[in-house]
Structure formats: structure tokens, C-alpha cells
Amino acid sequence: MPHAQPVDRAAARDRVLADKDAVIKRYAEEESLASIARAYGVLDAWLTNQFITWGVPLRTHAQAMALWRQHRAADTESTFRR
Image (cartoon, rainbow, N blue to C red; front, side, top):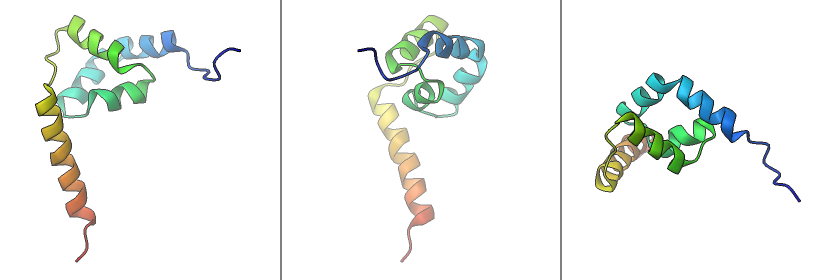
């Protein structure tokens, strides 16, 4: 039985390639690679390899976690009520 996902990965990859500058800008503006990959419907591993091909410096795990904590703290501050 074929997969139930009607995701056209080739078309999704083509969209990333066409939007290269926007994709790189989103990452540079601290959006996570995983979030960008989800938005375009591509796999994280494929986008990682694309960034490497494009020469985009990737964040270390520690850098990614620091950004995640920073964004999470900002979200918590804006919604926390005493």
C-alpha cells in the first residue's frame, strides 16, 4: 500500500532552491533549521546538506539550544501572569 502522504518532495525541494536567499535569511534571523524544513515540506537532513552545499555556517547544537532557550524565555515572559 502506498504512503498516505501526498507530499511531493521534489516540488518542495524546488521551492527551497527557488527561495534560497529567503531560506538563508530566515536561518540567519535565528529561525531553526527544523522549522524552515517543516515550512517547506522537506527533510531536515536534506536542508542541512543544502546549507552545507551553499556554504551556510551551521549552528552547533549548543548554539541551537541557546537560541531555543532564549526564544522560549521570551515567550514565557510575554504570557506569564502573576
